[in-house]
Image (cartoon, rainbow, N blue to C red):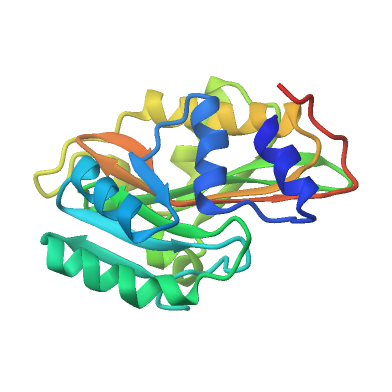
Length: 231
């Protein structure tokens, strides 16, 4: 996979958010529409293409926790707000593969987390749980050793303490469990097919109209792992 090999060639162990979501999209996981830019001219064109409301983020492989570095602006609805966000964030981008990410704003009140952790003994394990800012607070996640099947994925959804978030509640439609299970199955497949991937963190997966969309993601690779084919 060219994205993984590119990171290796730059001696990086962490993919940018943009790169991570490109990997997910290649496997069919729904991701937010976004454009990565490295100049103000390209930024303004991206703003016109994405449309409002939007999210603007700093995208830098050297900065994993963007919110802690104040590199995210959400619910941008006017061009003047977008320009101000660009001028505030751009000077702080330093990585060789960095830029500004102009992203559609996915509207939804429920957030999930999914991912993968590779254990030296058990291999890749798929993770699922409550996402967003509450991931670390509630620590409501479950794991399954990959590969997993449909019944495993559905069982994972039943095992989290906050499983009611998946139901029709307060006027919200129920979450499409088949679609979420497909995401979990795909994450397991990514781990099985790419031995150099050590960790995948998709957080949050925002539920919009009952279906999940990955709006942020991190992938960590091991330079000493088996290299992927350069497809």
